[in-house]
Picture 1: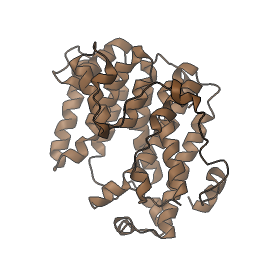
Picture 2: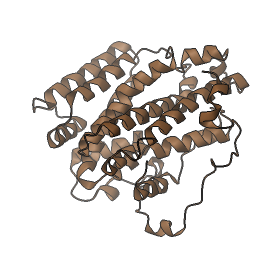
Picture 3: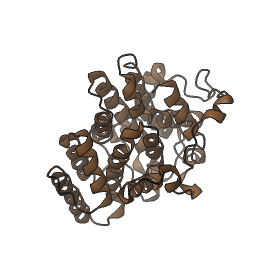
Picture 4: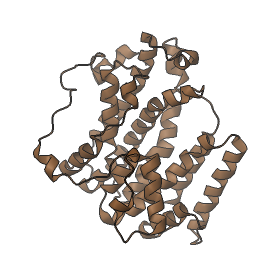
Length: 333
């Protein structure tokens, strides 16, 4: 899709657009905000957040999230207490799968690890999980909330297919990948919260796809440093952009147009998800807190005129914990 056709969905390309600037939060909320943990680089331990009654396997999952999926870690901590450990186990399971691709030098080894997790899920549903911290916590979550095995297997299958170092052929292929990973993760989170609602599922589907697109954009500088480009080929071809342009960190307008088209698609998915706002049970809103981080990235990338390599996009948002708390307090997503 050409950038010009998406102006109505996103708005003008240039930063400084009225309505897209950040509003200053009331100062009084600072005093009342729950003290969320600091970023992974702060050195603060999980034990300080989790309390004395936490098990060793639960602490392992929390620490894994804190280091590898900090945004997911914060979102999990804002879930109801009875759902928190199960959500952490689910996200830790996702992290274990996600890091397989970057941690192996040969596809065969990656396939063996995926096979381990397939057998692990089968064993979990036979009440015989292996002695691995994430597996044990995931087994507890399955027992506690009767989680759907199909969603767990879909995540593994899709991660397995993604072991091939190939760019997505088109935006639909990227969205299918996001649906079978990020959206499935949200369907399971809804089950943990005890939500069975069609509108919540529709919202989860769109949020998951937005997450997948934003993750692809955010990871582009990292992948480029390893001589890899995974951006959809159809959008690149539409604007006459080659993989080499991204490897050279080109700032040409046609490169920015590729980024703009993808960001606009993510923005549309968030817009569709929020169109169900009045129909989605309020109890489901905590599952969708990750929209705060997605919106933050999309605003930032617009402010730098869709320069995907701009240094500001690689910096942590130190106000994210507060933003998440406020969104949770307002009961919005």
